[in-house]
Length: 217
Image 1 (cartoon, rainbow, N blue to C red):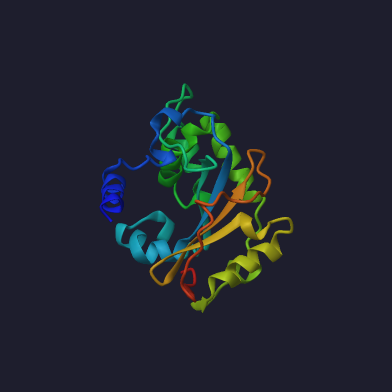
Image 2 (image 1 turned 90 degrees about the vertical axis):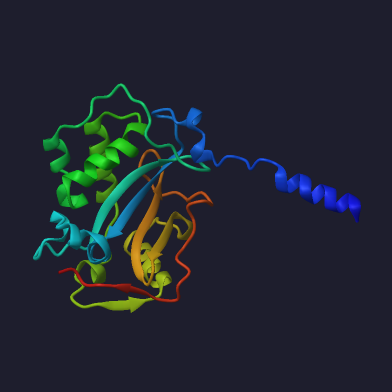
């Protein structure tokens, strides 16, 4: 009994291993394994945060549904962020030109700072890759034409994307939620922007039985 107690205390006091994404030494621009394309359900973000801020993304009449939250370089475990790069930052105009798929130039700029610098691409190259990745994923028709609030199981959202995008495997997509609302659909892509399975740390679906999808306003 005494031996077991000593072992338990030793394990409790041992320093925890640092998660891969906290290991700054690994975060070198261009060194990563794959991408995650994050598609955010705009009405949920607007009702929770954006509308109160007066965000352009949430302006009446824009009726945005899924917008690109970001294209994120990933490791097989963890992810890099805020890398140092020799590439120049994008101009305000270059960032603003991404507003049609990202909702605002401000979000595009933030994604470049946090994730794009880790891609090893120029700002124009990263924005181009983001646009290309989004262009390869078809939004299911029922969600692109939603005219009323609905609630449905996360698995139904996942199945709709798989049906609309042949070649997208079940392990290549995950659906996340915030509270009772749909938050994002995340799709894993190779560095060549082809669908691939997500690593286990990304493959965590929303655990709710149903999620709310507010209609675009």
